[in-house]
Length: 100
Image (cartoon, rainbow, N blue to C red; front, side):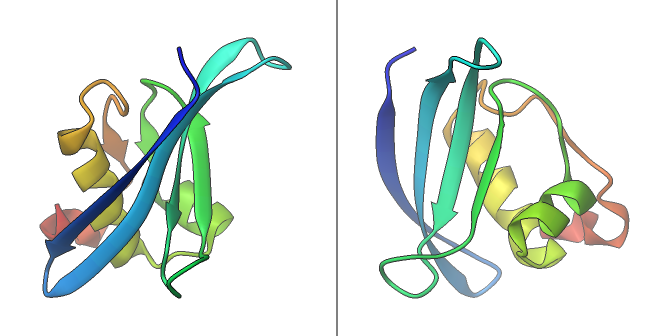
């Protein structure tokens, strides 16, 4: 997989999200990884990294990225839709399933 980054802007539930989505090869773990950065403050923001094509557990991702579950559910669902194959499924949604 090539190292690349794409800027992706979208609106969901009356919130505008400006994210950088990218991928890279992790030599230590010998696997492709995906990441996003939420450009929440314009030039910087919280980040989350996962193994390409894996399921993402929302509570875990929220804890690691320090992004609220509602925002994170919307962001990851958009990534799953806009970039097919990047995320197998989103799990642990609970009451946040209405943010899909």
